Image (cartoon, rainbow, N blue to C red; front, side, top):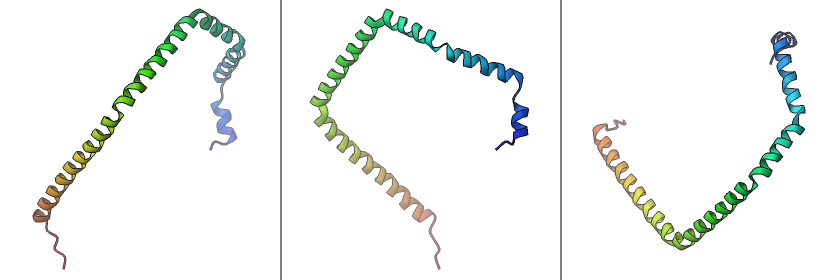
Length: 107
């Protein structure tokens, strides 16, 4: 944590001017909102069209998932069993190989 003298040393005239400029930009929010409103008013057909296209794409996706959900569940279960079985086989092979290469000499 900085003490007061370090904070005062870090603040200079350039930083104050930048802060005041940003504050002035922030206070011009009304003008910025007017620009945004004009942009929305000019491009509302594109926005609505893309929203409708997104809704249609979502509906198609939901219908496809409804048709293929059962198959996907069974394939994912079988796939997980295959992956786990393969992993267990690899781990067992490595364990048996290391067991004979590096035996423990416990007395």
